[in-house]
Length: 211
Image 1 (cartoon, one colour):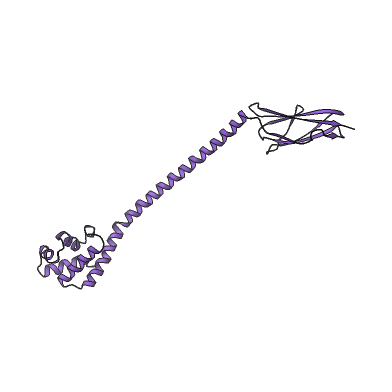
Image 2 (tube, rainbow, N blue to C red):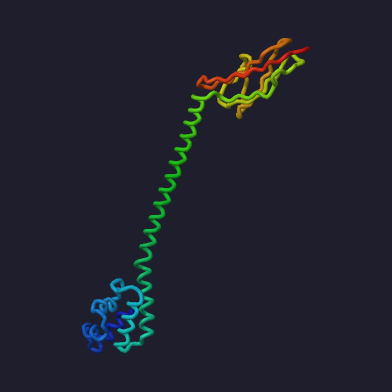
């Protein structure tokens, strides 16, 4: 396939013109004329300037203007596509990949920091504050008609609960239920919650057993 630059070269040499003569007549630099003939389009100005050079060169040599410009546009666009766009795309893809990896790394580091902060916060709370404790049954000053009573409540999941010195088992959410035996008459039930830092909270329920 004959390129547009070769057609210009053949037509110019067949008519005996030098590049300097063409440059003087068309006001196009010799270096630009050489770039057109050699297909070195990167050396030409961008956009309409390059198209104007080709049009004027074709008119001067008596070549079909529209055909020469159309051929040049095709080769010029292909040259830009093959030599410029892929490089840009590769750089963008590399940049995007690096940016993606960097973003993922930041997310992982951020999650690790969050987990550590939560752990430290939990440990700090256990070391400084007493555990929570709520007893829903029996109510204060209740009258019981049985010598056994069930103590129901909720506390922190990672503590030990004592009901009158007896250990009560905890569910995963910190709920507990403990049945104990008591004597008739007025009595006090002591519920104690102790965490692993020995922080302790104590509640009492004063009840009366009538049989």
